[in-house]
Image (cartoon, rainbow, N blue to C red; front, side, top):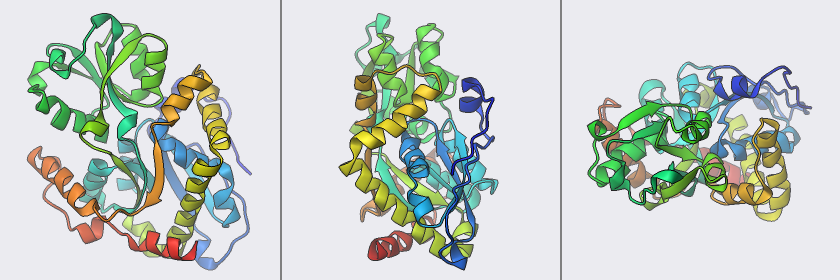
Length: 332
């Protein structure tokens, strides 16, 4: 059974960085190790929607797991909540995981999806911009501190010969960017689905480049070290639920799309089925623990060290914890 709080406006819902949307997921307890309520963080953009589907699907309930939801605009805010030990589990990309480990010991227990194609630079359509090099002097909306924002500034812009002094960075939550683009208070945005698809379908902006050209962007399910130490069996059982989610994405796409589309329309977004299909189709849900993560994460850490965002290269055995997913797959 899901318990919802009434009276939240769309603005309050999407802008809240620390407020929790609480859902008690009732179900039988399978063992003492599964008694703990999981405090689940997720972002209200397309990256967080596989997690949202997990919470609405009943798949955790069937496994006797109880969950409390914490929804925020972007994953870096979930990471900050986890550093403060307000949340146990949350989704975000590699750079945020590394920063989260540096600040609070966070560990990745699975890669749940790849989202490089969901992240794009969208420029106001009336400006007729076709290349990244043309952004000099423009006002660019960026969720500063997010993995997408970091990769865009550190890799995409630098690769085009643009430094921070060459453009005006406008700090903004991703859910506010389309309105800013429409009002012409910014010239471009680095944003995530479904906001990019909305801007394109409404004729507000044009997508110039997506981040899959420089990064497939694996999204991790991260956990606090406290949670893993106290609830290792719960973590394994929880990841079994993610394997069920992947099966639904593959075998019941219409059901999945219906649940997620309802989320956005309930918050006031108007999206045609075609627009939503485009946005959701850019997410690759594939829970696992790829063997090439070490080299990928090492590259991300080197960038963060150069930018002085972390104190040094971490111990990867503490950052990447594949044993939980291995046990989940073995017992699925």
